[in-house]
Image (tube, rainbow, N blue to C red; front, side):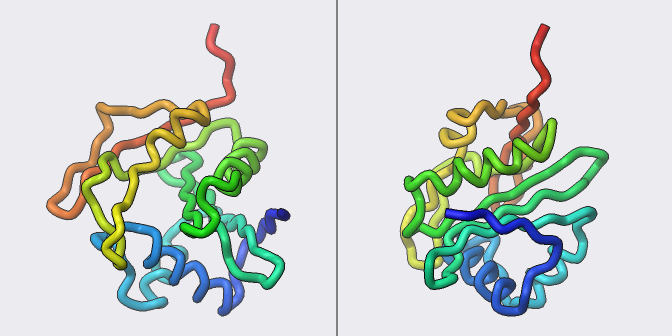
Length: 158
């Protein structure tokens, strides 16, 4: 399983990310059109994509890193068919190997559903297992969704 690191996505890759996003994220943050994904990606500074594909070039996982508020931020989406196979951990390891800190927002609870009405499970346990801290003081509570900030640093504590 190789991870492809690139600055720009092809049209087919954007379409695959669009479908991955809409299939795996809660319905509250679905994208209406691929143009919404393009607008989001174009708004990010110093954006790098990480792609994991199967032998038929189907997208199994996508991660991004970018700069925001003078910090390195990231996001990861894994296809449900590839969850619990190590792809998410491998992508996270790759991001950690390229950065000294990572910050992200994650859904805080399991109360949301995906577009196929299956439960969206909060990824907090995954990130805790991978040495992230949950910054409970940094929550974003909106009428749409409740999220919490997560943070990882490779700096040794003294």
